[in-house]
Length: 167
Image 1 (tube, rainbow, N blue to C red):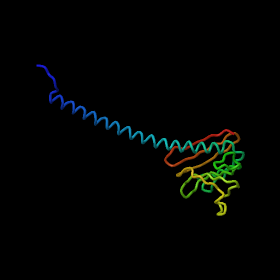
Image 2 (cartoon, one colour):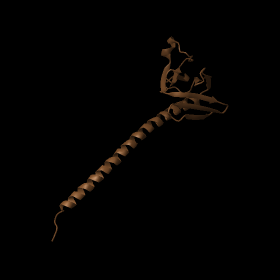
Image 3 (cartoon, helix red, strand yellow):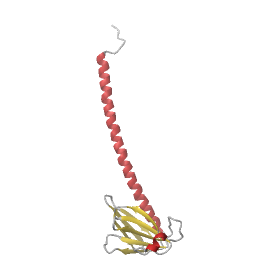
Image 4 (cartoon, rainbow, N blue to C red):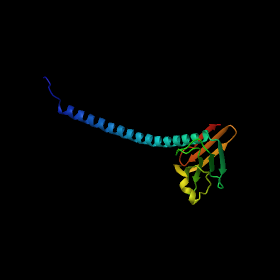
């Protein structure tokens, strides 16, 4: 007897196998989506860290004069760069200050043509360019020696950023 078609059992077995393969493929695709989301979040964090490190490096690499003032709470330092070679706003040799706002732990970068004194007076607010670098900054320290500058920045729930610059 010559067969020219599938039997009903063969057809049901092939449909069942196709269904199991489909379920396994949906699980694998779901896992790939979860991994993609995870790595996109990591990419955002790494991109922020690289932006912060690049900005710090550009500010401090060519800085002719850097002064560090420790805060009274010892949670952070205020770093003042006198007549920086780096400007985000096209200013010629601006004064730059890096600091943390205590009320919400925001790391900020201030830039002005005139020396910046803290607290900022109301009449000076409009002459200072402000950049919010990152929120939830726990520590910002700069260690200055004869040949090196070491910057330590710690954000909550993240590994610290450490940048070493040779003078």
